[in-house]
Length: 571
Image 1: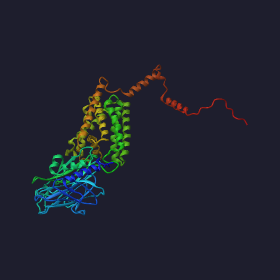
Image 2: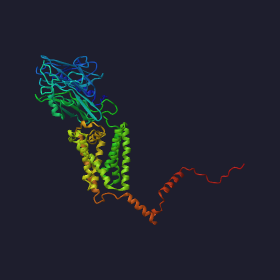
Image 3: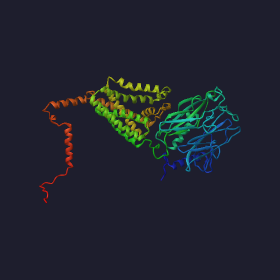
Image 4: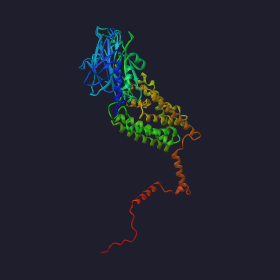
């Protein structure tokens, strides 16, 4: 029986792929020697006990530096200049590399690879050459251990992902020292360099090692990065050498940076780094099941009710009000308890459900007592407006620098959200049907996202992150839009359009809204109290009816007395 790893590929498949690569590229794993060529990727199995020596021979004289890098999916690998790595001559991580600045007449370069695991780790390695006019990535490192550090350091949590890197330096010929990093801020110093940060998304719902290794090749060299990656931001030397992005748990993302010298029009790439914003190794809350069971239950129930509202909401007015009140109060209460308490997510979700039920019942009770349609429609229109505004900022418009300012963002967001109830103030029935169709069908999208990754869930999730985390405004919220997303978007559009169409046809010729329930109840009560011929006039009051029911229940548990005369014994 084949043993499966967490990525879904068997060890035998990986071993066969490696054997094919070994035969094709002359990788001598048995002797611990890895013969490499510039710009060619090589797959290799690493372990803790036997370091692999990587060698490049016959290096051209115009090559002045080489970036050697190794990548693994989830296990750390160590790349070093020496067979016995130390802090200053090695780098350890899932995506790590070293820069070798070549001496005159040097034609051979050597590095050493090993993993920190006793078991074999599948990895891929490549060496990228650069010439004298190309910038040196990480050449002015002052923060990390290596003297020249071309690596991208990545940190993530469930909300955002941060990448850090060392500033680059200008290139130089062999035998010549690179310019000083503190030589000045003019055009002849490193201060003229620009940094373009690129982002690349792996295929959705694919966590395999083979997929990662194949796509890393598209993000390692300057030409392929520009052809395949998406440029997110350009930094100058005056900016901080870090950037923030929205985390996408379960979705593979590769980041890389191209440093550009505008004087010589030359570029060089850092070592790419990848993340899934989740753990591939843990048994609980891993990348294979990032959504917890309570969340799945909550959104599945919400989707069932939302699907009913989508097609029949306006006809069942009280159910419609309960649904909208549930969402409004649940959202408000979730934000409140998350910001002011440190309760766990499951507890917050339960309290949110309870608060939502209370909010829905309160809105229904308000309608029953006062029957004021405009106020109810303000709430319904506001829910549609919140979703519409979130959709606007879900587009690339949301990453514009002007919206990094919280004041600008929230004023714009509020105006868009409030515009919906204002525009439809003259046709409240159509507004309610439209809100039922769009909001109700979107709850189905959220339920799908609990079982299958889709970027459409981040329409509202990024809004929650912006509310709950004060510094989330600095994060870029770009998400992939692949085949699954197009299919789910089509399903959402069909449900919304179908729901609106069905309700418009059902409600044709009907009154816009039901009559005031409290007035009907009061009128019926007065009629029963004055019309003695009405059978309902003789119905006892509610308190007496409840008392009679309790007496009947009590009689069921009373022991039956035996029949016949019973005389006490006389002494």
